[in-house]
Length: 188
Image (cartoon, rainbow, N blue to C red; front, side):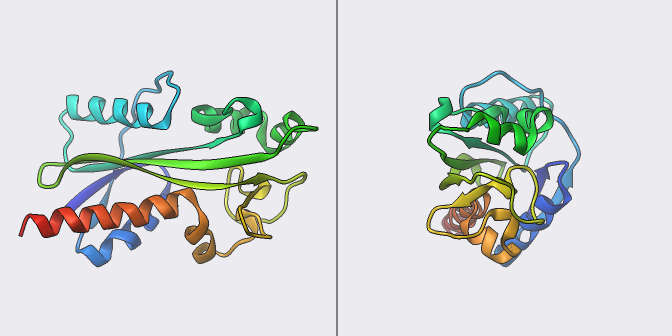
């Protein structure tokens, strides 16, 4: 079986390939963009993109969207996490949180559209907090300022295996593999 990953991130492509290979699923790269919609949840963004791609004739694809949510900022940056990173970066986020509760969580919503296995979405979540200064050289985005719950390292300080174990996308990938396996076994 082949599923096409909608992404511009080569690291994400490799992560999906590694995660789905044990199921006998080949992951190919689908170079296509979705329109950015104004939405309140990642689930809404993923569903809108799935509908757009299906309307454009695409089938057998996976896509995801991720964001960081800070309750003290009413869930901001949330679905706007990428834009906020591009405009104010980690330093701007640290300034916004000065004097506020620093609890936060990352979410990753994955959408699958497969002629053989159906359509579904699922979400992975990583609770944690925003620390007071950047730490670590690895990762990207908010990784240098986010420390997952129960850990003493930021995502940027973790090796890839450890980060994937604690990250929102890593948790969503575990659920994705479980769901795909169940659906594939149901087809036998």
